[in-house]
Image 1 (cartoon, rainbow, N blue to C red):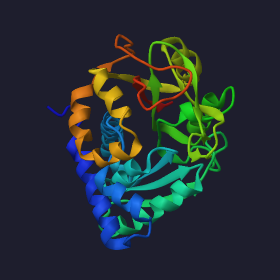
Image 2 (cartoon, rainbow, N blue to C red; image 1 turned 90 degrees about the vertical axis):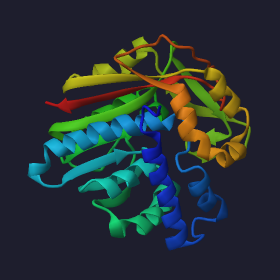
Image 3 (tube, one colour; image 1 turned 45 degrees about the vertical axis):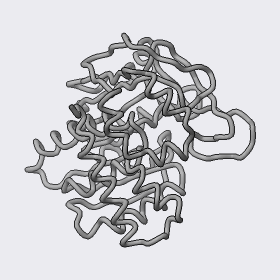
Length: 302
């Protein structure tokens, strides 16, 4: 009934929210503190990414455990997943972001979790196009729904080259990207850098949604150094659910966050390979009612 182990990740998020409240009080502010409890996983579309990333990373670490704790680099992903890894796996994890606000918020969250964690977590401000790490230092590099937001004509390709540069030979790369049946570069009003509300009515670049051709040209074409390449398409079914939820507004979606595991089970379906045979709905300007899927790519560096 729950194909992507939705409640596993939902209950981790809920426990993290409770730990934050008990350990940090209202240090994050009333709204964010409440949000960590009411909407532990912030979107119904996030669960398949957690599931497939967790499966790839945990499986890889289990096979290489004889070498000792692995070094993991997160590039800009939702930080709740990085906290989940830090709590669950004996690894040295570095969580990066281009936004100082995201880094500082999750430093506070980790402070409430680290005493009982299996791994260690550090934080760093980084631009994915120019990572400030030496070559070949990480066993695992992952980036969840980030590359599509990186500005510049070839911002996504630059970032992939950096992810591969800092990954050790034999190391695991896992990325995810939005996917549909037409390529588009979306804009968003009053939201800059895919991370910051501006309070104005100007439009800013928000993200790329890839189709089959753009995925091959912009992403897979950069991954020629990967072996055992695996692709998973996450399709959305019952698109009316996602459109209806998007129409409710951000605050009401937060109040209904406890429904996200059930909604994920109703909407998300994973398919092997690249499969664009599902209904989508999106246009030039990003809206909460947009419907598209994801592609999750993983492989081992030669």
